[in-house]
Image (cartoon, rainbow over all chains, first blue to last red; front, top):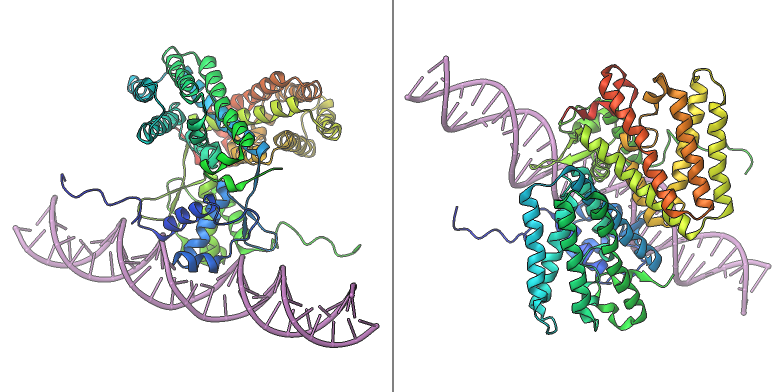
Length: 253
Length: 253
DNA sequence: CCAGCTCAAGGTGTATACAGTTCAAAGTGT
DNA sequence: ACACTTTGAACTGTATACACCTTGAGCTGG
């Protein structure tokens, strides 16, 4: 039990379908497939070395995920997202996170969960303690803490249905809590904003502990203004578009 | 162009996959497949006369929809829903409808849309004008008006992303606006409650017209208390469980 | 030179075959 | 009588073959 390093979950992921899903998502977000372009199953099969069947089910999954849209005559094309849609996607996530937080506060959260949330906040505080610019390692630690915090919030109300729906809302790359973080990191007031974000995190934990449902909900909603702002920044400085995943899917519209 | 009655969209729906999806969903909601039961692809293929491939993609879609859950060793089983989960699913829908309504109010809605919404409300009012018990036909008219109203709200903010997400939230049968309506119809205070519901509809239209975002959002949320109450009623009187679609998926939990 | 038509190439939807694996039941040994 | 083993049936994941459809390019006729 003690030996045997975990089988590398990333590469040798058992099924072909999962491999195809990961690979295709990666290709789409990397911009290897232009928005509006039809995804030819035989071509993808050739490119990935996976047969058409798993490719096909991966395409269905990606459609449900929102990255692809069906074509009248059959098959799928890469979806393009307008800035307005991205704004809305972020608001959807924030709204659902707010719901989860409110329900959690109203129903009460287990002390262990509060502690785990506090751990995330502490980890981020530690990362931000220094006044120097963020190193790559510190940035990674922030991303990790932030992702864990938001995952915990998604499941905080103890409802599988809610957790699923929140996760769905995060599926779009720009709607994810970490979607615009790299943009954030290069901003002049980066540290200041990140500290503000973590102050909001801490306030949410406090609200959950005190069963303040409305406060927890409002905080989670307000919290999503930060990526909104980063989106504006990205809009204003097209050069930093490269920093955000799936940037190629964003169209002026 | 004038002749040729539209090909019956319901039965001869072009693709096998769509047919399989409809048929399987129907079977699950009708309780022909018990919750927890594994769905054998060959068996379903035999039962429906459709080959395994379309069955398979339908299963994937039903999983994304939330009606099925994956089994460790492969394949899917019918998902069971606890009462708490149903409550939460209704709240999710209400929350997202509230978001759509608020955004619509803030951004302003086209006069044509307001008119269409008002039409729904009027249609329902007409159905409820009479003080007698609801006939089957009047009930159907109510269901239709109600469904149209909620669909319009889902798309009212003009965002495809939001519309999609709201529709997703309505996918679970009990979370749909019409999910518990049949229960409502047999209640002693049926007409009273339905009139209350439509008063809320009308208030939402008013709020949209007046760009009162917070009001529109709060109304849509409150509006979902009615199905919540109907859920309680159903719980108290197990005999009427038969009236709601997918009742067999509800477990005590 | 342009419009319309034809034809071919490619692509999707579907069926089916096959290998590896899981699960359960029956049988055997104690 | 009970527990363990073994075997077989069934099922999933995957590959592949095939028919029908769509679409675009090239060709022909005006």
